[in-house]
Length: 261
Image (cartoon, rainbow, N blue to C red):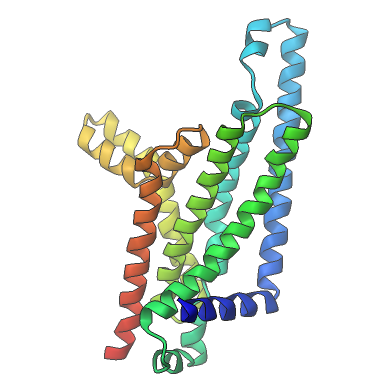
């Protein structure tokens, strides 16, 4: 594991030496603040209108999690399909473009050391994004009473989604020497996984229950939504680990194939 940590430290240092990491962190934080502010304004306006019309039943049903935190986390989960590929696109493709991939493969490091080290660097960055994101709903605990468990489950959903996206981004970066192609390839895969839920609903309209269930399971949005609603199920959590495992296996195969060319 020491060699994995060495590769991860090298990737993180190179990432933060360039302006990419700081630009991504700044834009992500600004977008999070923008969506959070929109959510707060919308919540306050809805609350004001309900009070004006004396909709007391509606007021009793309103809560910060359903009306503010869950929609906010849902918006930020969509933002991740742009952010994570931007971080992972250069993990392997930059090595190929600079001609350092052969040196890396002939070093004492194993292929798994390289793959896991680079993924670990991306995972640390995703965790940093999760910490920044948690700051916004965390502020509501100072002024309101959101549900701790439900909020923590939603943040966990964001982190697991980001980790799964990082695995897919690693695979996309391992099959090309162009960072732009790696970004587009990862973005397309993530977008497809995100819209699987809508495709599953079309399957339901055609009375294909098995197709709906299969596509629904493939959908990242379906599993994230369950976590955002506070429903922590082993099926949803295991889904993200399965995606990560498959992505890393494919990444290893892609990196190892260089030796046979």
